[in-house]
Amino acid sequence: MGLFQKFKAGLAKTHAKLTHEIKRIVTRSPKLTAESLEEIEHALIAADLGMAVTQQIVAAVKQAYESQGTTGHDVFAIARAEVEKNLSSNKPDLLKAPSGPTVVSIVGVNGTGKTTTSAKLAHYIQSQKKTVLLAACDTFRAAAIEQLKLWGTRLKVEVIASGYGADAASVAHDAVTAAQARKADYLFIDTAGRLHTKHNLMQELHKLHRVIGKQLPGAPHEVLLVLDGSTGMNALNQAREFNKAVPLTGLIVTKLDGTSKGGMVVAIQKELGLPIKFIGLGEQPDDLQPFDAKQFAQALFEE
Image 1: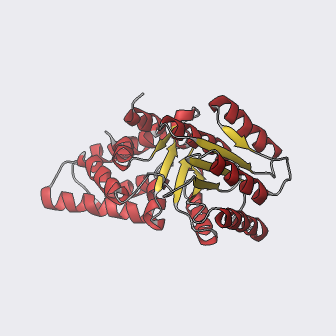
Image 2: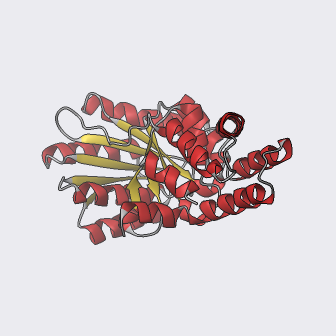
Image 3: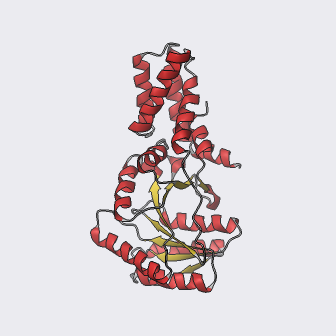
């Protein structure tokens, strides 16, 4: 399956809901009325595109009608162009440390798919013909360590782990030592799920980052927040608060294949200006794909 087909399949629910609504509105009357504009606005907000992007699209649609008297079906082309424009500054590439391993800390609340995402990122790095290690630093959840080890076996990737309840920072320390010794290109650290409001858990994350920064100056080189796409605009609040607590370098949005709220990707990028690095479009290892603004916009608004 080509990359665009993956985007299209993954965003099928959001796309179906959006195009059905917009078609219904524009085919009802060839003229663009205040009422139909309001309905288009509702359809865009329902897909969680956020107020700022929605207003931008509606304004562009209105302007096109006023200046060219275009037929309603151009709503799709206009929306696609506006979404792409909003996402055009997005830099999805993973950073690379100038020397030694690149350390990537994977953070987020419980249940967003951090452990699976860490493994899929390892798979992605392998597909780039680079070497990778995984660190099981979610020591709160016994199942997380086992889950990461299972992925490690499946992908033939070494997992640095300790026991349940171990100090996460010392596991991270051992993982950085191992990554340096093995001359690995990347080390992905799967951290415990935590609410941004839990001060003690946030302090623990700061400690983990401090420990690896002492051992390898500049690390972690990336701090990626994993968001569950099906939570829609709730994810925006999470991203906002996490970004205040630990400076993030990018976002990964998972579970987009199971939701009609895929527009939240655009809303979050618009508000926070953080790059969307990857999006999760299914269960398989290669269903985590580097984010592509053009293909995303096209998959959302292809008629």
